[in-house]
Image 1: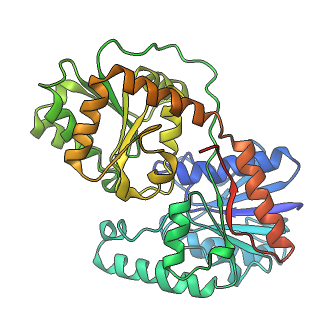
Image 2: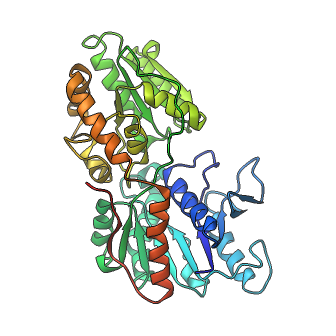
Length: 384
């Protein structure tokens, strides 16, 4: 495979970029290091360059939240005639990232297209408004599966593969390649002497950070000195500040906002418990980031993806509701032996993941697609 085109509505430097964008970029960087020519087409945002090369990946930006899709298709068409922002590319394969809706690149690319789906968005669409939600879910659940009825699919967890099956996508063409993780080179912060919870997330409604604040409020009297660190930024931040104020816990929570990678790992290394109250996750890369520091995760089993990234009872605890989350966190904070046992198993499991292994898996999927074959099932796996 000589050249690949990656399509995603955001990149990692976008103000709302997250784990799905990181997955695609890290894979692209690994492929570029192996001699594959990689181009990423994504949305533009204030302060971003229209075109740049970063870590071996050529990045082309254009359009916004909705216009990124038609402008990307136009750029692909123009490139086939040697014109436009993507002129000069001749990809052997395309990865079309479906964050709710795909780019529909198979209509114009002329080469095999792999549809990357981190998770289905049924629970998230209502945030976009009634009309957009209805149209979006129709595209995601009906139109896209029909249009891509012969295409290769790629996802990051077994639960996400099961969700695609419910939409009619045959499992024989749904490859599962789990996330990698960046190694932690140096961390200056020791474990906190006082109990600390941490949340690492974009601050958006479906991440349900309110639940972590509620846990803090419910446990303050039971766990003296308890503190919550919230790492991340997003447009829902004012709502979260207001919720913390209503609960009377502003003095026991630190909103760090967007931080550097070094600072992120410093905060994680100080924590006792990582809380992930998200309504929906494809995988939950922050679970593994916390695990690198021996920090177990408490999350919701209904999020689906966490049932793959958290080994319940071994590397963390999965619960069904806020009451369950409160008691699970209380139990870990109060039981040093259990917390350390889960944390060490989480650390061991984290060592099984790398972006090199993820790129190996994605590369196999793309090579098979170019050869006219389809792959299904777990392509890259950890021990558990």
